[in-house]
Length: 305
Image 1 (cartoon, one colour):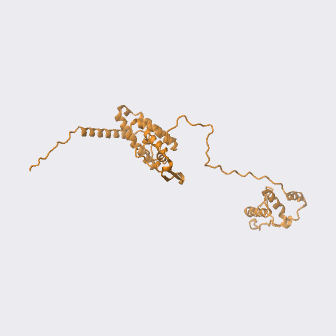
Image 2 (cartoon, rainbow, N blue to C red; image 1 turned 90 degrees about the vertical axis):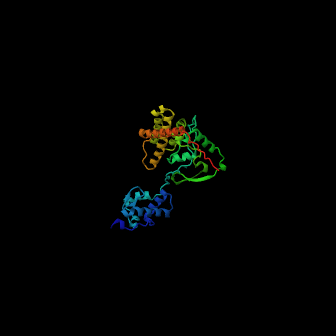
């Protein structure tokens, strides 16, 4: 007969008493629970023609419990040994619950740095976390001082706003920390000294925002190449051209990043830089001509009566 079609054994019969008691001792169960566990083992393995063996092996199922009541003489010693109640077996240690991920952990040997970097505004940090364009004004002395003043404001008087954070979580922040500053300036409206001061704090901020080493290196070389470009020899005019180029390129880089077409920003496009410089020079010439042009002649009307 196909073993899968055999009837399951009745573990309540006396012939299975030793197996039931052994299961009770090993699993710390009462009789009914031990029988239920044996039935579950049979359902899982008995259909394949194998009966669970508490001794660690497998034997063919025996559906005739009466034969177990009349064991062979050669098996008496083994069966008597099996029928002896087994001593309690120590349970496997219960796995400790997962550590609370909200607990604060730190390096007990580490100490605070000798120099603390100024913290930019929450608005800026959020923009960088989303890999969006942020004017470098927020990293100038003026922008960092404004951020520090906003932190010192009384939290009780601030309006709170709910924003969506990473992975769908909701975050409550001060409403004024989520908006752009009315004092912010575009990159090309900064002085060259302000721009170069801000870039150091910007590089630290994008490192903290997890932009990755590749992006961090690219922007580091971007600022380095600007600061060592030959246009620096032209003084204020050269620095202004570099600022306008950097302002346009950095904004364009973020636009391309959103489209999955970001490029290596550190490579200076000399053709584009030359166009920016010529456009600025033409604008200066036009302004100079406008200032040098004499005002239109004043014409008076003589009213005759």
